[in-house]
Amino acid sequence: MSLPVFPKEDMTRDDAINQILSSIAMEELALSHVINGEGEKLQYVLGTLPGITPPELPTIEQVLQVNESVKDMLNAVATNQFLLKSKMESVLNVSTSYA
Image (cartoon, rainbow, N blue to C red):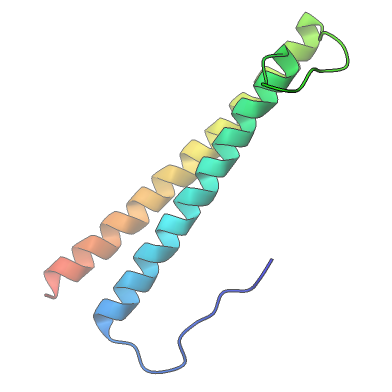
């Protein structure tokens, strides 16, 4: 995984706002990958993931455990999304109030 690269020259206010909004967009993209992975996890356990057959059918307890794991992850993603929304609204409010 590479480290972020920050511009070395002086940035304008608009450049800084665009950098922050781009960062938020990249976090949203990463969260979409997490959500997709959780969906594929459920598909795998249920034996409905195209092209892949699980080694054995899961027990009800195993399905419930995976479901709980997915629920916990989706709750964490939702919390992160609320934080990103708040960040975005703050940036957009600052950008319009000083325009």
